[in-house]
Amino acid sequence: MIGRALLAATALAALPGISAADPRETIGWGRSFNNDYFGDNKDRWRTGSYTFSWVRGRSPYDGTPVPFGDILEYRFRSEIIAPLRGSGAPGDRPYAGIFSAGIHTHFDVDAVELSLGADAVAIGPSTGISAFQEWFHDLFSYPAPQYLDGQLPDQLHLGVTAEAALPVRVGPELTVRPFVEVQTGVEEIARIGGDLIFGKVGHDDLLLHDPVTGQIYRGTEGPGNGVSFVAGLDWAAVGGSVYLPEDDGYAATDQRLRARGGVHWQIAPGMSFFYGLTWLSEEFVGQPEGQLIGSLKLNLNF
Image 1 (cartoon, one colour):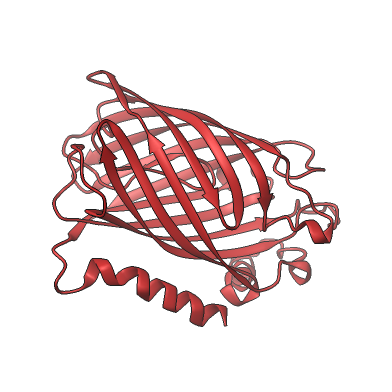
Image 2: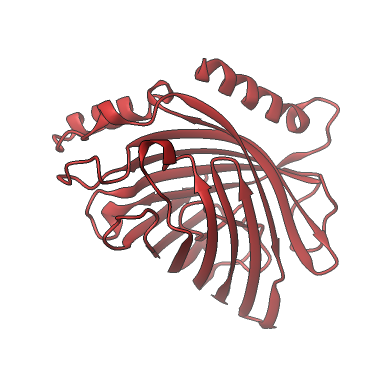
């Protein structure tokens, strides 16, 4: 059931951007890979995720304002949430295998950068995420994933995300970008924060927030080579989370913090690299501490 519904959602999302009558073209590809192996290496909680963004527009993006609907981002995402290895769950958070597909538009109103989108989010064994993790761990002789029998059951949700950012160019190599974000669906979140970009690249690119870490990843990559450093901080009020079902005795913390830093390196046209670290505060009642996640992207277009 989930597979058929997700395929239908993906097909419906793709129609506006790939129909023969539509003048949009591919203007960028965004990627963000997160794993705590590159952070604290404790294989727990928000242990791994991958986001892929296919960006289409009516013209190449150069940082100038664009109207609603001109730019469409087709976002595909997978994630594994897992209890701490050896914790003897329950008492820890439940395992969740997640896959989502959606469509987002990015536009401007005066100096404000806005985005609005929806995602179909599938959770459970039928996504194939837990089976893939078992195969991967077996392939490399890693310890088998634990508590799969108690993972969240198959379910499908619609999530909506809206964001507003006000980038301020302080100098030729410094941009400060405060933002607010609201999510509803799998998690009810209202977030406020900001990011800083210092360096030679990224100021005029279409900037996207990774859903888990908040790290900025580039949906488009403009001309010019060089290095930029990024840093960010945000605070969120949380109303609830499907990943922590209250009926099963779990409880989400009512606040979350994220602090992050990283480096973007534009090596040459079509070749770029990113590495970042993000600290996530506790997300559920009973979580003993926060966690450190590493983010990685290597872009090689020939």
